[in-house]
Image 1 (cartoon, one colour):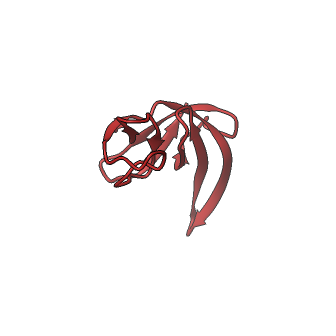
Image 2: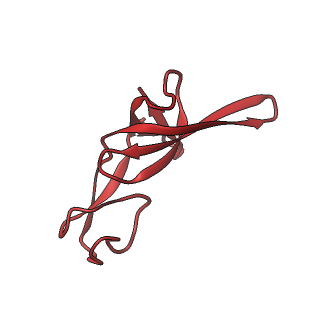
Image 3: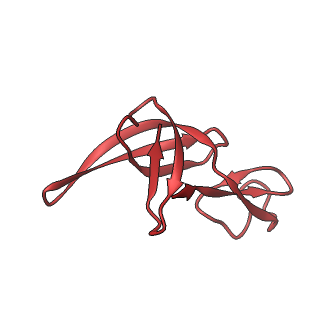
Amino acid sequence: MTELQIQRCERCGTHAFPDRLWCPGCGAGELRHVAAGPGRVEEETSLRRSAESVRLGTVRLDSGPVVIARLATGAEAGARVRLERTNHGTIWARD
């Protein structure tokens, strides 16, 4: 797993997720990928997939964007987490 990457505008500093063609803050096309950094789980829910239960959470990054991620054990509403992406693209929130 690797740390989740989000975009940062070189002109105004706005962070964005998911990837955009233009900055949502100033409209510039000068976006580069940076580490997402830490955030806090705002909400959590569980989904039932056949016999398996999947925990999902809304994570607000300190830099601003909101990301929906699978929650690892210990990551619950109010917890400080870091986001990681698997080789298959799944985003995990881990404390």
